[in-house]
Image (cartoon, rainbow, N blue to C red; front, side):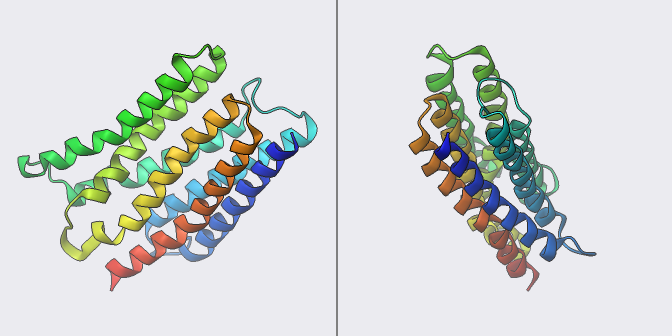
Length: 221
């Protein structure tokens, strides 16, 4: 339990640092909504992990039954998905045939997420609750990772918007698959693996908002 607690504290602190940084930088008039959504993704992780820290200190369990900290992960991934879906994607992809391969190749990311889910949560004899929670999180990761990979490989458009955000999309992809790795670590009850994944998630949460800031500065100049 001690390592699980440390793991959650690490991710919580890093997520709060990213969230506070983003709040200071972007939650002002005329600031990019895109960056605000990434900031809110960090905020969801921060508050979700804060809940899990408190739960571990009071109840001592975060895996045997459904708990609200899971919503922090889901909320974070939904914000990452929403940031790229819609307006941002339409800036790059006009829906014509010439970009067809850039719509097909990114299917690799959601397919990989689905395969990992089947291998680690469907084929083994996992509890039903674990399968359901992991399935929901994986489904959101599939959507978010598709657009992150798509914008990572997509040719640049006017004003350099796509190229400017390639570093962000790399970090977002890493974070999303770390969410899967974390589920596997908890399912395997490996506290060492939980700690390693949490440190990597913490690093990605520290980097994600400043990386978006640098990208926005590039396309604004």
